[in-house]
Image (cartoon, rainbow, N blue to C red; front, side):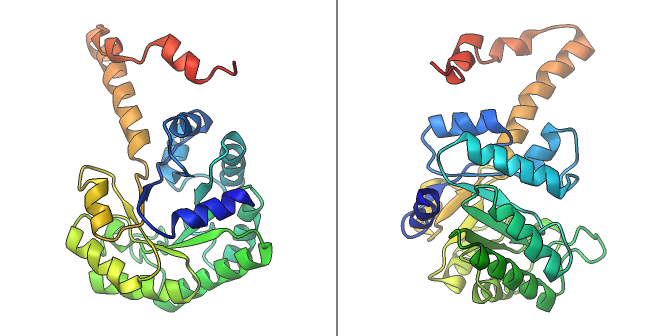
Length: 268
């Protein structure tokens, strides 16, 4: 119960960063660095097991959430994609399953995965959020629900439509609101004001602003999505490509020393 309480308290005031590990090792290191909560990344986890983003199964997602939650003592928020179902009954059943993994929070997004119709129709999107809310309430675990609108990530960057959807998701029971892909502080501020007093999460996937600037805009929570995983892959690809194409190993000189990493994972 403490993790649920702590996670809700983090959303009550101030601004905090909730970074996104992709496996147990990265989760443990982020906690060592002092972060008070973590969030899973669908893309980071998928790449780690050799899949494309959104290419994992519900069972794999649940196993991953159980592993992250068991590995750390801080609250874990689940990137639960679109609930692994297009219909409300499926969303409710899958959210109920996720609630049993030990997570303290969960997000549901309104993207369909269909390039021709990338967002769920408005009414259905709201009903899916209500279904997630009911499932969480029935679990009696105090899980915090985040409503995500994906327009800026799927080629529909419409601020008015995004605000309309986030406001409706708040009314449907979302505790926190999130529109990944925003890069303008003016747009971010507009969303913060539109859904107030509910907290807003902002994705920082590149250097668009500082924590202080986002806090000044009224943002309560900052996540980085797949960016940490991509940063790790960047170092891997640079060094591996150098070896494959040039037969040299200079990139390995930048690797974190073995004793330093081993110390982080030592049980002693």
